[in-house]
Length: 304
DNA sequence: CGAATTTGACCTGG
DNA sequence: CCAGGTCAAATTCG
Image (cartoon, rainbow, N blue to C red):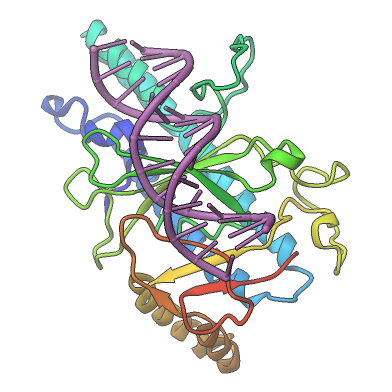
């Protein structure tokens, strides 16, 4: 497994000729954190479907998101620290300055737009200073929010196109949240797990505002059991998941492990009765279910 | 028929 | 000028 964020994957060992980098432990930490992120995302895709009609589903979803956000921010800080250390240690100032500039730009960026003057045009390119959180996961689509695809682009030097999504309620509720999903290349620069797991790079931009204004930030929110979109949580949408063929085996094995301990067999059966699988082509489709739920690869979990 | 997706055109920062 | 982000008409889907 190789987990790198964006541009840094093109520089696996920026200063290889110096032997081991001074931040070797940081690299290791980053790798483990990325792996943890991926596992959390997978766990989320398993747990949330199991919480259908459970009033705690919203809180659980938000907790998952919070964990992922924390992890992403920690990774960003770590990467920044790593970059700064390298820049300081390296005598070649010009080269490193360039590397730093690139990396800071491409890697996870956590900041506010600050004094960034907004263009007056509606159609504008996304500012790099906008807050974004990157996540590498084999389960790119089930994150508790409902997204509408608005574009797809072929990206230079990438085998797979990048898909652009915005919050389904972006228009009516002014939610600015967007995300991009791109399947990782399976060559050396990509990140594919040892068991041929297909990995996706998901980048979240902006915060969801399609939730009631009364919601507090993260913890301690109490959820109204039948509140649908008026619940005190950030998850406000009908949620959907697609589990592709690759995911089937790993999820099943994971659940089998769980079943030995805590997970009741009925829950397992229920989950995988509802879940069917569809092939993963260029971009994994995810769509609304047909309200019957059986037989063609899509899970629908209703409103939270 | 309305909603979601696709896709080529358009726009803009670097 | 190019790469990539967004728009919007056309198309598909439920």
